[in-house]
Length: 325
Ligand code: PBG
Image (cartoon, rainbow, N blue to C red; front, side, top):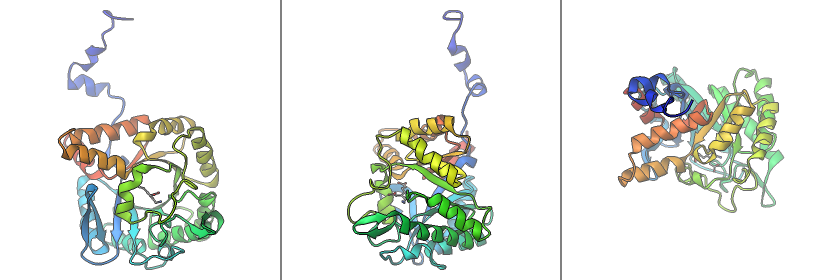
């Protein structure tokens, strides 16, 4: 059937029809909101390149949790900014580390919140790389134990799920084994399975103070030119025991999200990263785009491409907008 018998506009004539045939819907239950927790007291500093996002100390978290829950966001992803760093990133797995303290505070003050933790060393190493340096290289195998120790310490502090973002080979298996040996077989792993060496992480590195002091991350994160390799990375993580597969960044990699959605039956998460958020905010601040609408369209497109879960700095504002729709 073609025009004039078939007229696609019939089903677009008003919002009742449009909402009736809408194929994709966003819900606040899909969102995970990243939180930057900083050592110290009374700190709530806005990140200049990420308006509306703060680095905050543990004592501020109860208020932040309340704000998330009021908006309808019930899941957070924790990043830590420790008081001091060293070559081995030992602050990542110490018992009273910054993230471990944050988990306890949140579990105590806002037990209805789901706490996911980023498992990586880059915020804790003085050189800013995601693993241990041996002969000027990030050494894969000696990093694995530190990562699994970090994941375990998060679980022991009360985290609901761990999310390794380091891109070392074999880390999902190592973390799974360590969690299982310690009676945490119920803690899922959301693996940053397909993480590209992206320039869209720029604002995050300012926020988390985790920029590499020499070189870059191309020796462990994926080449943005590669698509087939995403299957190999995802397959390995599935075999190693990943429960959720993440693609990162999101908007510049919608094709990858879509392909993984078709290939795997695991839940797919996408990380709408700092640079992608910052660009919307910057354009909106200049009056060049309608920031709210562009935010919702962006998140919708990530979901439409196939992401079940969206990690975004826009979670709270998007959840509030969804309430008023
Ligand atoms: C740590 C990590 C990074 C991000 C999440 N976890 C930075 C990086 O890999 O350099 C980026 C998140 C963002 O840009 O919003 N490895």
